[in-house]
Length: 282
Image (cartoon, rainbow, N blue to C red; front, side):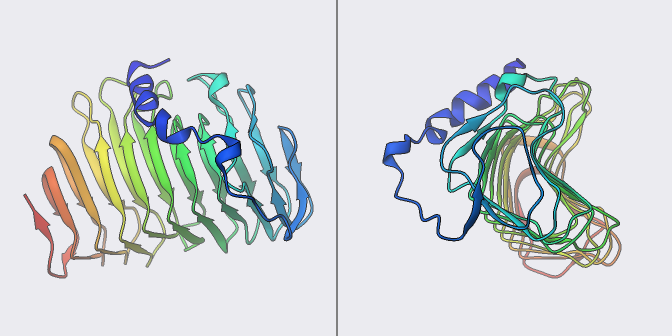
């Protein structure tokens, strides 16, 4: 396993270990059914719940595949583990393709190629999850560039380690990004280019996020927030590093506006973004 990934895993392992007996009692009243083993394909709408920790060593596919619209995955703070597949895994933790109104909440996803990967569709909500040791993406919501939902209140730790991936991302989403923490993004390649947040949706809002722990390698450039579409508004975000990073805290796009963002120890605060005032960099 990649040395940097091991270091990140050890750093966050203590916080990730929560004995089942110490959890508060969960309510399953809203559950349409339960996920008892992996892999699983969800073909019926409703709320599908976990009531115990689950894991898999599969190296391709998805631990949970959503094959219906209007599905909620509620892990009730239990773990879905994929670390056993190793650094070459292409398994996604939770996957949906061309589905509408997918919600993923209260999940602890560990060691997948992407913790949550939602491709196309819309109306998605990814909230209140803890995702660590993802190999390439913590959360990815991709589509045709239009806004596909909301990603909020997630904790994304120690993303990186996929072989041959120079660019790794904490969150890549055509969605509003609100109040997320991305801590630790690195690449297994020599010229790693870590990105904390990538706002792919036109006219989306990126607000109140915290990005830290990016590790750039060789000639790689770190980016706290990349605006990959036009009209993104970034406000009240925090981008910090322990040592001065090559790269930029915010890489803007056309008609993007940046206001009240703070950057510490990035080489540049922002490029290509209209300054709405209150942006600070040291």
